[in-house]
Length: 311
Image 1 (cartoon, rainbow, N blue to C red):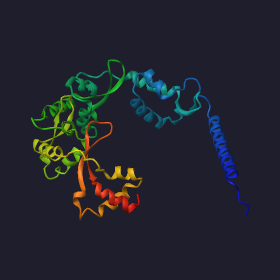
Image 2: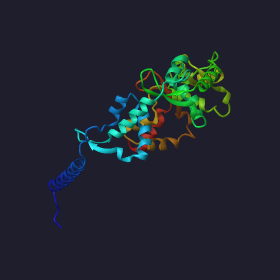
Image 3: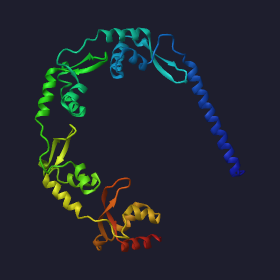
Image 4: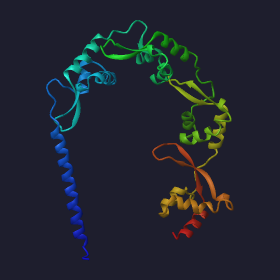
């Protein structure tokens, strides 16, 4: 069998690649030719939403309902840039216009989530968390009405607004000494994941050390108790930065050009007989001013590993 040199092989590969590329382009061009440009009056969702003054979310809901009875009101057409996009017929647009214009303004007491958020000075995330519990069993508390700008938005009923207010008023601000994990992280200059890892060890045994309270910005966040703050502060506050020569497994692996798993496996053989070769130190997290606690390997252990790996 005649052996081909590398140049011939490269030429064959390039030829096949060009054939595949041309084939794909022809297939795309053929697909585009199968679709015409939209007839006059047919439109895509974005301009319909802008003309009618409704949200895309509302439009999607109404289009879905109308297409169940009139599937021919939606068709794929090409646009000037060559993409194929779904367009909607003048009949669909007219039906949507009639619905939008017949929508009523909100009765007294009904409010949008954003309006309620501004009124109470509470983040919309908090309000949504409260009201979402009632969407299935009390759908009548959620209705679409026109806003003062003529747009259609979900409004919530006076009954639900009262429930939201009661829920919010029943919540407390954090007592003195309670802190969020982020606040404690800033105080100790430690990465938040390190703080969270220690805190989570007490979640099951001491659930009373974790409570939700209001923040200054109107959000609800989890706080940890002074007792847990003290435990974490003592554990992390006493941790120093690594002395010269001590490295983490990942940094040693990178330094000697070996895999981290290989380095770790070699190190583990010495843990039982030389536990003092494994010590946790603080390292600076790149791009931040905070630190993270990671196990480091002593210079003696590093030498052992390098000898075994022939580095």
